[in-house]
Amino acid sequence: MITRLDHLQLTMPAGEEEKARAFFGGLLGMQEQTKPAPLAGRGGCWFRAGEAFLHVSVEREFAPQKKGHPAFCVQDLQALAGRLERARCTVTWDTTLPGRTRFFTADPFGNRIECLLDGEGFSQK
Image (cartoon, rainbow, N blue to C red):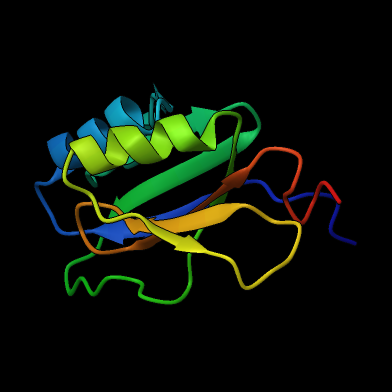
């Protein structure tokens, strides 16, 4: 039986680690994690925020995820939206689900990212 979600993985083009660090570490405030030595040579970056683990891995024939996406619970959703907009990231608010305050954005590689108000996440209600 599954007991919990361990991590999510997104992909990016080769050589774009600094963009991943600027977005996930700088804008989203996630902490970069050291990759295990056997995997370090493959490129990419690993991040953590609380119990959310994200692996951003290099994919040779990269294509961004336009539908599939991670969803992060955020304490101050308005502040994050403002920070993303100031960094010229598109923030699209979604009101289709009553009782859930959320928006969508994209990482520098075009992967879809959902951010929702902490306390209103699907795993929280």
